Image (cartoon, rainbow, N blue to C red; front, side):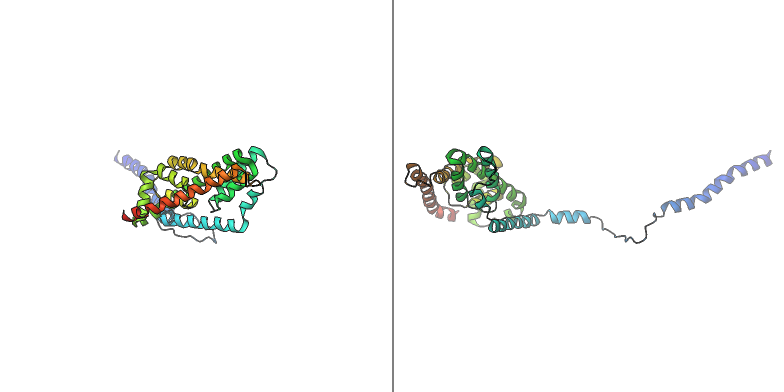
Length: 271
């Protein structure tokens, strides 16, 4: 019986010993790396390298550099190709009526981001589409261009520029835009004096909301834009009452803006 059990035990443990002796080789071979094709070079990427690159690319100053590059490129393209001339001659020529006015408004908004003067475009809108349709196209283009500039400034420039608001005048303007966004932007649009692009990017750096900015832009730009459009539509009859009234609407808000800025200059310095 003992010999049988011993034999049975020996025969039972023999495969397990063999398996145990073979297992280190199996585990060793399982840990070996896969065969690398000849001619390839393994590049060791340090841990967190992708995250560091993403942080650098998405940093405030990287985004601000991108904004500056976009604006410089847009301004250069405007100087080279002069897209305002295309709009003044009724681009695209195969469209007319409302379709042409819609295309005009879209192009108007895009090229105002590239610092094209709005008065030229407003005069062209009046000459091409008349007073009513031209005013609608010009106001729509104004709101579109302001919204594009505001979005670019808010996404790419706000985080980098807000820490630089240290002067009294800059802090006062930022506080005015942030606390009284609609009222401040409405005044800026009604009394021209601040360039269109400058008002857009100043508002973008502040904490003004989207809705007050766009609504104040639409309402505030309407009188001045309509005056230029009417002047463009009646340019062939400069002695007509409509043309003279339009020129008065252009001149009076500008003078009022200069007077208000002159009276408020000491108030801004004292804050």
